[in-house]
Amino acid sequence: VVEAYKQGLRPAVGYELNPWLLCLSNYRAWKAGYHGKVSFLKKDLWKVNLSDCYNVIVFLAPSVKPPLATKLLAELPDEARVVAGRFPFPSWTPSSTLGQGLEQVWAYDMKEVRRVAQSSAERGPV
Image (cartoon, rainbow, N blue to C red; front, side, top):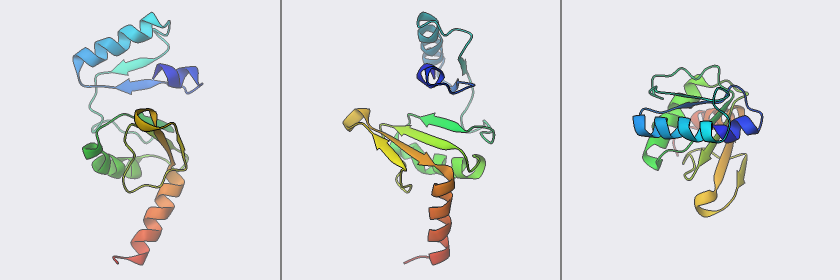
């Protein structure tokens, strides 16, 4: 969240349910001088409406990616970009990647993800 803010993304908000990680995130933001500029909220990502988000960054396990992909497709605007760290979305084709190994990230443009998904749905099962 701090890095997103440094890169000019506003607002920069993180969602976390684990109180320890929430506290650690707030501490690190404060220590880096970003207290009051970024926010970490104790909220369930599955219950948050993301329809007004244009930049989403996720660091989640592979098992969470398929249901998250469904949520993001349903809620994000076409102009949104999703960046996944550590693990890609298995059914999406990234518009770009950066890094290698544990440091690799995948970027997805929602308009393109939707176009490919719609095209696949129109072709039907193979």
